Amino acid sequence: MGLDYQLVLWNKHKKTYDKVILIGMLLYIILFASITLVFNSETSIETLVIRAFGTLAILMLHIILIIGPMARLNTRFLPLLYNRRHLGVSMFIAALIHGGFSIFQFHALGDVNPIYSLFTSNMDYDSLTNFPFQVLGFFALLILFAMASTSHDFYLANLSAKIWKRLHMLVYIAYTLIIFHVFLGAFQQETSLFTIVAMCLGFLIITGLHIITGIKEVTIDKQQGTYGDPNWLKVCDIDEIEEDRAKIFTVNNERVAIFKYEDKLSAIHNVCKHQGGPLGEGKIIDGCITCPWHGYQYLPSNGQSPPPFTEKVAIYELKIIGSDVYIKPKALAEGTEVIPINISK
Amino acid sequence: MSKNDDFYVGYIDHVAPKTKGFLKRFVAITLFLIVAVAVIFSLTQSTFKNSTFELTSTTQITGIYHENPYPMLRVPINHNSYKNIVLLGFGKSSVNPYLQKVMNEVVTLDKKEITVEGNLIYYNGKTLLQITSQEKVSLTHSLKNISSNIPISKLGQKTLDGEIIDPKCYFGVMKPGKGKIHRSCAVRCISGGIPPVFATKDQYNNSQYYLITDQNGMPINKDILPYIGKPSIIKGYVEEQEDWSIIKINTNDINIVSSTSDIYQ
Image (cartoon, rainbow over the protein chains, first blue to last red):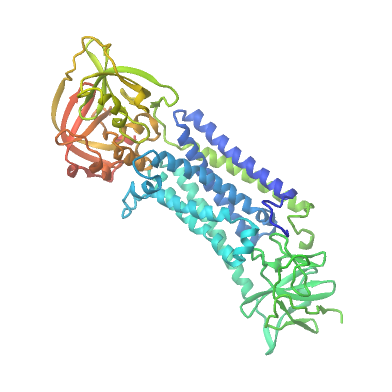
């Protein structure tokens, strides 16, 4: 969490994360270039750069898209999610080098503007095999640029988490465009079973993981409790909630997290104001509900971030009858003070 | 172990040992994946041809200028043996703007001796030269006893299968300088005034190249753009002018085919 906006709020883990990104990127580029120069030495430098960075960007995009669902399925992947935006920006840089070199190589120094040339040098838009695949890569690059340039908390706060999230969901459109860019472009000429299988495998892994994650999310949404009283919804037994942790339920079509801590219970809206992280999968640390994605914190008694931070989430009233936990489905205004339910009394 | 003991917060330095071990394993697997993908993608590239573009060095050449119909320099190699070097401009452009200065000095530049300096492009017996400045072209008078008449052999109608390429990229500037990946660049080059060439193979699998003109033997550029970089069959009247062949075609006779041409093999 940070109060003012700096280019990067560095910490130990971010530095380690970025070092691994840099090592990985250098390893790929050096290996690709070395193998090409040794076994296919007649290559040109421009082609080497275009291919090395293009394939690197695709590999990085696959890793980026895998981290999301993997972190939903296994919390040990959460550290990879924490600084994923740096991986995204790095991937955009690789894609930009690929796209920039390609536009210059294929379209610059001609009789028309390079961008105009990109759209008009091949007009076979009605053909699948002859389709102007570079246009697809260009649109993907524009999306990646929009995402990379807004990969900062300043834009997250000013665009609102909802719009920011929608903008960044465009990565799936970019991925689709890139798949077609490769299959209608490079694979039309550089046909290799190995590369085609590798791309198909990557697509299947990403799609499969997202489907599995979707099924898991639906399961959470089914945990809705039962009404014993029109105003109170019975959701679980106290013992079902682990100490300093929460259990998530869907109430009035909204996910709510009920936390157990210091012999008390509190319920807040499950969605973090930062990036929409699942607060119910977080933990009570220093008396605050801590989001598992980026560590944003909220006080369980009122859903407010501790001062001087200003984020607020909706809060819910609870009651206990015997060992059963009941929740009032109507949310109270964000930041409303609600006395936590004491379990022992 | 309770999951409570293993909660990661990015801005807290401490990381649970199990999480740390997991991350190390993940990084190791990712690095292995990086190596594997780099090996697969680099080793499966088609073999690049040994064409050359001398980007960083220039060569001075003296010869007889002619346009049959594209700007060329006829250079004596041995006694009664000549090489016709295709002249090209910088980037994706014709050489014509770079000849303007010497053209203003004479009534006609055709069959005049000029000395040019530029970047050589060569492959498979064909040579081209990129000229990047008007100052690198001058009229000279050093060659003696050179016939300015180019012998022409008329070979009649031929049908060829192959691909229309731009010779600047194909013979050295880009790799690959043909096919779908390169198509838009070839369109730009030929649109900019670089002569179109038909690349094909003869019955003995030897590469053959034909400068393409219209049926009257005049330069053809814009009309041929939709056919560039696609496997195709063309038919036309063929002439041989020393080391270059010319095919005179009607663009309506170009037949785009779906099969892969031999030039890709």
